[in-house]
Amino acid sequence: MAQAAVEVPPKGGFSFDLCRRNEMLSNKGVPPPSLRKTGTTIVGLIFQDGVILGAGTRATEGPIVCDKNCEKIHYMAPNIYCCGAGTAADTEAVTDMVSSQLQLHRYHTGRESRVVTALSLLKSHHFNYQGYVQAALVLGGVDANGPHLHTIYPHGSTDTLPFATMGSGSLAAMAVFESKYHEGLRKEEGINLVCEAICSGIFNDEGSGSNVDVCVITKGHKEYLRNHQSPNPRTYVTSKGFSFPKKTEVLLTRVTSLQEKVEVVEGGDAMEE
Amino acid sequence: MDSNEAKQHNLMGSESALERTLYPYVTGSSVVAIKYKDGILMAADMGGSYGSTLRYKSVERLKPTGKHSILGASGEISDFQEILRSLDELILYDNMWDDGNSLGPKEVHSYLTRMMYNRRNKFNPLWNSLILGGVKNGQKYLGMVSMIGVNFEDNHVATGFGNHLARPILRDEWHENLSFEDGVKLLEKCMRVLLYRDRSAVNKLQIAKITEEGITISQPYALKTFWGFVTFENPTVGAVGSW
Image (cartoon, helix red, strand yellow):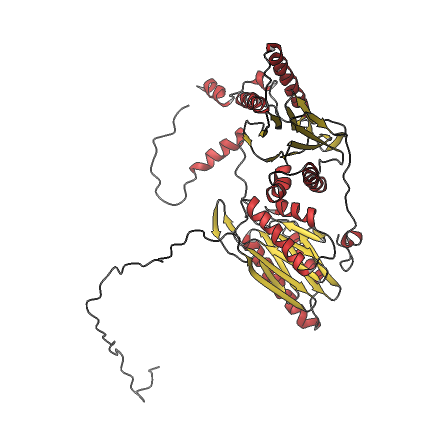
């Protein structure tokens, strides 16, 4: 193949050399690298008095854990919480936005928010963006019609379920739910089952890890149990602690106050026109 | 220069493309297996899917090989049948030596690994994930080989979807010295989750048991499922128009 003209070093600005290579590769049938999903495990279940939501606390940037202890259970209303999986920015932004909308709605109607309101707002927002808002949510709460648990997918479809899991660890967590869930769970049983499901995601899925957050919502009451379980403590912590040597010795300290550069004179001449 | 380029880019050549396995056609879903007190327990359903149709519902995916091992396979059924024929030949030649020795599970597993890896190197894989379990001289052995030749030995193994749905349960609940009943209950638990959550699963499964005494493969039977959740009965209560 005839070589291209002698390589001239780029003068600055964008270099589009790799575009030709990418085009050549895709013509040969090499698919371009796909978007990376941020891993997580989020779950929810309905127990006899209400809803329990659970989430892992790992946030990943590709292969790296960027946040070991992030909060994935977002506040929507005093009686409604929402777990988010997928692109972290999308889950935060969309739950924040709907939370504000719900609050305005509460002022407007003077009543407690309903879970289906949050559901409709979230699903229509997602559908409008045709799946580009990559947020998979588990929405749960207790309102005047009882406890509700829904899942919302990035393209805007929803499910109403007695137990739900989302995220990369959803299969591991679902295996636990499918084998152990039954109706009429008591609160302790429910919390234990949620913790087991999240731990199953933490230990069997690479995208999930660190600690377990739990949120229990019942009629008129909610308990946000941040880091309810920490099954991944730092194993080796030196007991001596760390002391960093001071790098620069202080030889002399002298304080000089700034002199005033401008004299303020009261009742001077008026400004000239 | 141009023809050189063409040859470089087309490593396979057009003739050999006709002879390579490119995609599977009739596939079996997951197989799950565990070691228990007396030997190995292996479970697989009897479905053979043709793409997304559940076409064959009486495919036996667990087969004894020799006196000491059972082979369970998921993936392309025709490749599984080919593997069985190769193993038959292997066991036959071994018997013809008539020296009182017989191939144990470890040896069969090694043979399968070599076969799968070799085919993968020729870009013509046998499209299967295999589980090989057996007992010889009191030693239990349970191993897995994938279609690219990845092989390992463990106390509990699964193929396909079983890795995602059954392995977490097994990691939590498996322990040494499971009794036969407990082992079967554990396998049924895993197969039930697979039945609920794997679209290519059918509710007709066989469980195979292998111990020092011999091999038994059960008759096909179905698992009980529960669909009576209150939310399943009327999910749109309070959310008219959703589902």
